[in-house]
Length: 617
Image 1: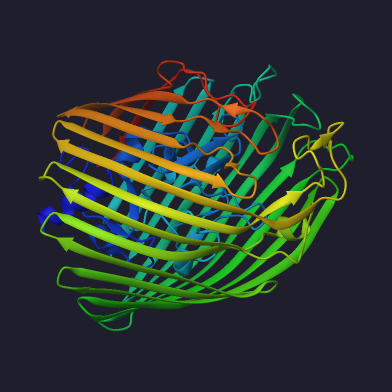
Image 2: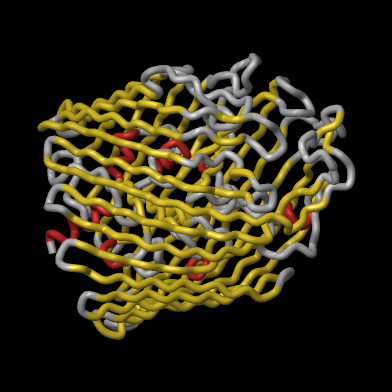
């Protein structure tokens, strides 16, 4: 059993610290698979970031935390609070489904989850599953799924904490919370505030772009018999300043941003073999522009998703599990963007079924999902995976699956809207091998291929295909169409070594993310990405460094800008001053590297931060 757990943690590249003052030895379960399973039983490429590592990295927002995940690339339009996009395994930025405690938070308008608005102080754990998962999770899971998890339960008694951090760009972050549990009743409440002056988002000058954010999260739960009722919420509200784009270049403007998630769940142990989980949720995303556009209008986008998910798990026996359920969604969209208004509702229903089987050294997973969308009708996706343990220390696996992304309200009714659009669809295959050399080191290698068709683009009817703007305005009569195809091939490699006081991890992704329709590499995706981390720790202190590398890549199909390759080095340190007080420090971009995550947009230079964490007994 010990070797199984160590192998699982090595395969997932989890930067753990062993059983000491900072972390406990890991027993990893993956919940993005719907039915929580031990990592060693997941036939997928997975990365888990635990609470200890989240605190040690102390990133300002979730987007920055995810930059350290192998196979994931980040695009960003400037600094704190600015729009961030993730590209997982070379797929599009809206091909990754993001869950918050199991609830999708990709807005119904543009499809990109607001990762830049979520403080890492709210997170207990992050799971990144690479590969198609639409059969389990629905639309947008072409490149994979990111499951963000906040506190699920609290220990008996009362505990408080406070985390304060300050540093470069006049940045201040405060987070405080209280937990209380007594018998079957438990409550968890967290409050946070972020304020920074930021820096000029665009190259070429301009004023600094500030950012403020306030957040509230928590839950109340009650256990009665074999049932648990839980009410949960997360609220973020903030203001983001930035510099105008093509319509008003370098003009300081700002927008108010709010995200709200409210959910109620009832988990029931019907009997020893049957568990049921019924969840009702509402996710709302609001963006309100505070300056008028060139049409003298104030743009805004308000989207809301009401969702019912009823999942049932049956353990046929200790080696066979069946998971099935239904999902019912209603999306409401009210927006105005550059003169195009959207006011509509879209319904979506789905039924899903998955199985997990183990016999001897073999394991098999299957999954299927039937989606019914109000506008494009029925759509079916599936997954099939097989793994075999070769000896005690090697796992060989193979999987295949399909996925899709339903057109968003913006695709259908916004600028260039087309209600005749079909879903974007994909077919993927993967083979992999995991091996544990000893109790200290392990490797994982995976080769994958994904073909995507019916990619949606906005056709501007510009024969040159390069100059898409005229006098600062988009050309007339655009139309969103299913015309593009992509073919992505890649190899991922990861290595993990842990022999205290040293912990080392390395990951690399070599891929060919090809736009077949235009015969070019896909925008903002590099052929080579890599990351490495090293940590040294003793009784009450530890230090670590992380290096992130991304190769050169094209910025956009509509310009000739190439983003150069770069390597950024970050450093962290923690010192346990006393039983309840931990001091921390970090330096981002240690060597002050000038690089870009999006064309014409700045990234932070060398920056330093100091913080303190205080907890009660």
